[in-house]
Image (cartoon, rainbow, N blue to C red; front, side):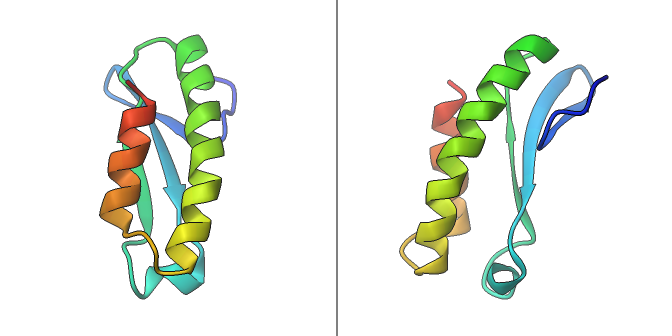
Length: 81
């Protein structure tokens, strides 16, 4: 499998995982994972690109304590639907 940023396979399904910056790890978990709900690497790449784009904005909100890791995970899960 070619290297796709933040994408990994668990069983037959692809997932997106991103580690949080060090300054956020004290307040939150060490990372966020969401299922991409696909067995296709091609589809996973497309979904992951959008999830990554949204995560950039969410990280800013998390840094400003405006959003929790659980809320970020819920929002990212909505992107995959």
